[in-house]
Length: 448
Image (cartoon, rainbow, N blue to C red; front, side):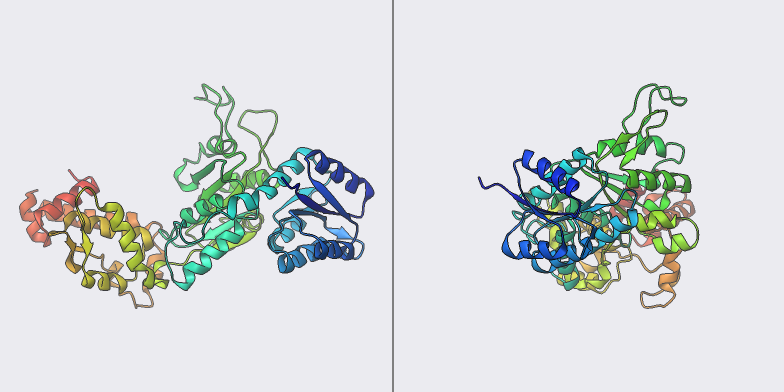
């Protein structure tokens, strides 16, 4: 088996010697360069599996090396060596395309982890076909672009901020970044920051020692430690309380956490991905989200397009969803007029809403065909049409569209039942529904 090669670039002889010895002990072949010019010559003459470069060089900077490799050797991962505490420099290098960074003085265990991860990239990613295995379905230009971005971002260890509307597929994108990266065989831990009670969030994220607070009857490993070696996906990160934002910032910068009640910090090796349906920049402006944490998480931004921007993908998504719903001998299909109706709808709830619409129609339809009337698409909130300029403003006031729509539906049904003295047959007739349809909605909404 051919030994892998690493280009190391630094103008300090002691650092070069340390890197050289460490890499040789890892059975790798190091090549040395002390300047940008020497590095370019070696890059043009050889094919390297990894590059380690210092930021400050006699005739330029490590950023020039990153840019040169991105342009002429895009499959070679680069790790930046930065001065101690120079987070801004590290972020600069990650934005430029660096795989990861390591601070001086160099910790050899961290160095070995970075080298091992970088060298796994080609083995893990090249065997995966972009389109065939991607859960992000669609042939629209927006989805093709998204899959290409994900494939590229998976090679980096930079924190990524995934922005998009509710139901657009932010967690799917996060899982795909993890699946295509060198951490694929390590844990992927999703965390809904808005679903954890404020008084438990520190313990859930960082863990706690036995007896550290009332009710801590045993030691608890937090989600950061559960994700060690893998990826931590912080969904709805905008819902974190300000005091936890400070602790999260420190955990990201120091790559260490302190469990509640512990005297010592615990080192962690985690890739951070985060998402929210809110406008995080707006949250910063209004003082609800720390600016320093925003810049640390938003090293690279990945936007997930809403479904209304890719109506051409709806037919493919419908086929996929119905294939999953069809069981045993049932082969429910979508009538062409029903598909046309779906393709003309704005889908404020995005793919999640499409799934819910089809699941409901699948349950209620007759003769193994979903007709246009079976879809029962929700009218615009507050009487606004999809083309009304104030429609988006109205939606912006809703924190969770699915919960809001269910609340409206529940109120309407309960009012009809009250008016009919809870006679379900009469209530169904009053609402213009079949008895079967009403029974389905009662079960779904938990109305007894």
